[in-house]
Image (tube, helix red, strand yellow):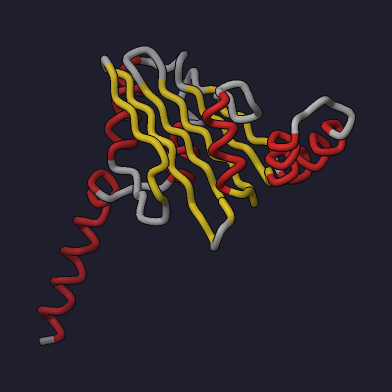
Length: 168
């Protein structure tokens, strides 16, 4: 019995390296993997940087909604693969299709002529805790993650306006 159990465990360990290729991935996992690719542009504005942005925004002319969202932002991560090889972009598109979205609600999903855009939100109660924008076409792939503590109404207004803080 013990010998058979050990064989099963050994087999499982041998098969384990193949699991990530088929397993769903996270936003953080996509960022981490693809930010290291040659040609990738990755920007992370941490909590500390966002505190400085908030301080500078106090002197700017922002409407009520923009001011509310800037105040609510905690961190921003942007991954752009425009300068990466076609092979990297293709792999990103395949991996993005395996994105684990169980913690998110789909806010917008748009497909048109080879371009796909998905906007996901992670909520806690009435507050948006994270907004993820995933967009890719044949020439570019982008992934944006905004950690925040914003009201859904503010996020929707900015997305609808097309020229606010979240103009991606």
